[in-house]
Image (tube, rainbow, N blue to C red; front, side, top):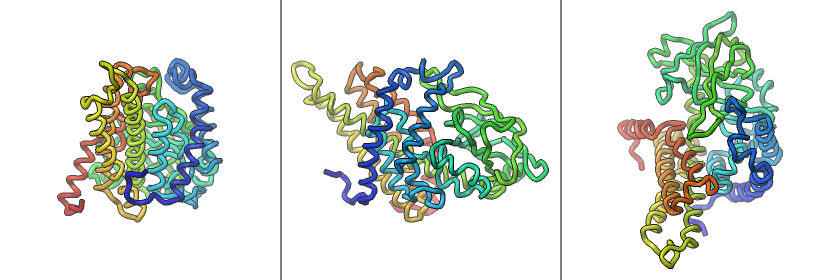
Length: 411
């Protein structure tokens, strides 16, 4: 029985059925086969905190298997080699992926091309020469990329970035640094945002451009891996650029108008993070409901105590609302609306109620909820991070208020 009054298109439902089988065969099975390698950070990461070569190879295997099966590129435009499905499919598939795999089977993040890590509509903006160089490998899942926007002094205020691309002959040389660049330790390419007109950039009237740069380019350095939540490694890094030479064909989109790429990408990121949060929160809620039905206390299942079940009912209400908001935002995007207010609402609400739902699931499990084996603590850490990624909840509220005050008051 569905709690949604409108029908998800049959092709998307069928896609999710097949995706579920794929996840079991290519993701969950790999975690079972390589359990120690993929679940124990002492084996997952090397002494510098990067994924080991064996882990990188497994990640590539999943990407390539997903590409061959048709899931990796399902939402990539047809002209780029994908199936051209829209944001509704993207949202539904990602939610299904994380609800199926939970936090333990983390290779699932490579089953569908993430907008900033693999092929997406973002690559429509690269030049034909760059496309001919990178597209085949990217679509096949052989290679990947990363998105170099955030800097130590430019997070939510991304326009404050200081990385510069200085003219050099018919090209440029890029100097600066980036932080929180997901996938950069294993990526083959990076889209780097840099000032190309400092005066316009200072006035916040453009002056920022984007460039596609191979991560093995001279002057491109991974300075350090950023480890979080007590982990011994990670897949985010601080990057340093020392006069990286870039050619005209490496420009992404229009000169001095690079923020169009950033805004476009972040919109896809908010759909992704809304879906990821909902999937992990639903996985957590279902785990808590199962546990409450079997765990005995004072002679009866704890599901018979309102102190246990009422918080779970509260989460069910909130997650249902988040689900509807996410579906609505995705459908608005598919029909060509910018949906700035609605997308901001969907992401902010989903991540806030999602982290509460996981926290309540932990509370339901008592001390067991903190164990690595159950996975709830890992889910909590993931979703707590998402409360900051692709626009903090405070920035999203600022955007919503700005739209409302500007006359966009339809709710």
